[in-house]
Structure formats: structure tokens, C-alpha cells
Image 1 (cartoon, one colour):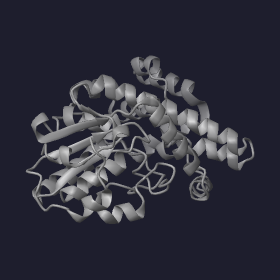
Image 2: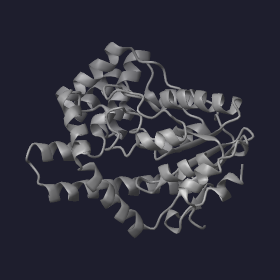
Image 3: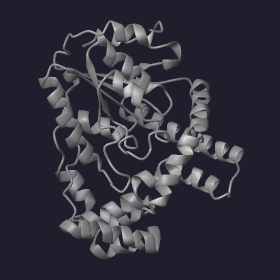
Image 4: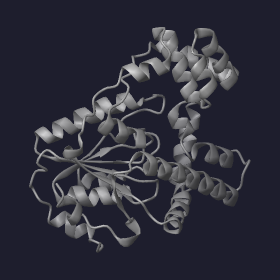
Amino acid sequence: MATKDMDASLERKSTQPGNGRVILIAGPTASGKSAFALNVAASCDGVIVNADSMQLYQDLRIVSARPSAEEEKLVPHRLYGILPASTAFSTGAWLRRASAEIAGLRTDGKLPVVVGGTGLYFKGLTEGFADMPDIPDDVRQAARDLCDREGVEGLRAALAREGDGEAAVTLNDPQRLSRALEVIVATGKPLSVWQASAQTAPFLSGNDCVRIVLAPPRPWLHARIEQRTRLMLSDEGIGEVRALLEKELPPQLPAMRAIGVAEIRDFLSGETGYEETVHRLTVATRQYAKRQETWFRNQMTDWQRIDPSEGIGADEIVAQI
């Protein structure tokens, strides 16, 4: 595809509605998703809807590579920077917010352009998701406190006592273990039971949307990741992490586990130097991108693949709506 000039796209913005359809753009970190979505939305009077779990947070614009304030002025952006870092936001909560946004845009004749790297969000939109119960704040806090005191093994022991031996054995991530404990304490039912019985219908069908995965060649992506890493270590990126750490939030919160937070924390403390921090950030981001690519390859087998290194034009995508 020929590369399109962004300014030209903005100048020829169309007012043609998207006929109720939605464009979904997934891809690994640093693959150019945001720029592509901006080009598409500018070409067809679209509105960009965030599908990246870290870009939900107000505190991490640079670290999460959220669109800049200037980019957000070019076309409307929704669900970016809407949460404080002290909030844990579930996939179900995102689905409810995103579905409402998309429905409202379609009613208004606007084209929703949903873009991000959180594969589970796209899967929930197009395939349905287990609609989990609300958890009382005191139950959630108790699970977090246990995680802080006793870690993974403490959570596993508590799950076994409460009757969810399956989660105790199969889960390794402290956040997921905490979630499983919250669910069984609050409802008396294991997480697996809710996941099996509370599946919601997909919000979008195959005919409702154009589904795209950006699939860049590895060397091209790695070069962009290194550029992203050095941007994270700019004064602005370091300042974001410093301000976040000053809030002394629980370490298991999603925002505290974002790539860049731990690495920049160690840099600020003097534990690592600049080049070592660049290396650690680059490795962590590459590993994350690889996990994303594996998810997209295994879970999105029927989505269109586009190589962003060839230059992506919006016109051929918009023509599909």
C-alpha cells in the first residue's frame, strides 16, 4: 500500500457515515496502531476508541504511548486517560464502557475506530465474555492486602481453603489469583464456574466490523521499540513514573505493573544506570510484543493482516465499510 500523507487525509475528511460498521485495529506495541487509526478516523469522520488497558490511565501518557494532546485534537478520542492509577479496571468494565461508546457513535452516524493492543478486549467485543459479578470494596481490599503480605503462595492457600483448588493450582499471576479469591469470597462460586456460565453475547458480529491486525516484520518492530524505550526515559516519562511512585499505591494494581514503572523506579533509585535501563526496557517491551503477537496469531486467525512497514493507506480500509 502506498503511504498516505496525514495532513492530506485531514484536509479531505469525509462526512459519510460508516453505515453502522466498526473498524477494529489490533497490533503489538510500537507497531504504529495509533497513527494508523488517526489516519483512518480523519478520512471518514471517525472517532477513535481506546482498546489498550494501560492507556486508560491518566498517569501514564508517555510510558503507555498514549496519543498526544495534539493528536487527540485532530479527531475525537474516547476512553483515553479516564482512570486514576489507583483503579483496577476489569475487561468486563471496559466492555461495558466501550460498547456504550460504540453504540452511541453508531447512532450518531459516526464511524467507531477501535484501536489497541489488549487482545482480550477485542475478543470480548467479537466473541462474548464472561460477565463477572461486582466485588465489594472490602473483599477486594482484603485480597490485595493478603497478596501484599503473603504473595502468590498466600493467595493459593486462601483459594484452597475457600474451595477453589483449580485456581490455586492453575494460576500463577498474583493479579489473577487475587481476582479468583475475590470472586469466590464474594459469591461462593469459583471463578471457573462464572466463566463457564455467565458468557455474554458478542457485541459485534462479523458483519458489523472490519477487523485488522498489524503484523510488522520483527527487525522493523524492534527498531521502533528501541525508539519507544528512549522516549520513556525522557524527562517527561521519568517524571510520570516519579509522580506515580510518590502516590505509594499497592504494587499489584495494573498501572503499577505497566512496563516502564519498575525499570524507571530502579533507575531513579540509582540501582541501574541509563544504558542498563534502556536494555531492560527494550527486552521487556520486546517480550511483551512477542506475547501480543502470539495472542493475535492464535486468537485472531480470521483477521486481516497488514504489514505497517510498507506504509499504510487509510483509503483501502475505509473502502471496506
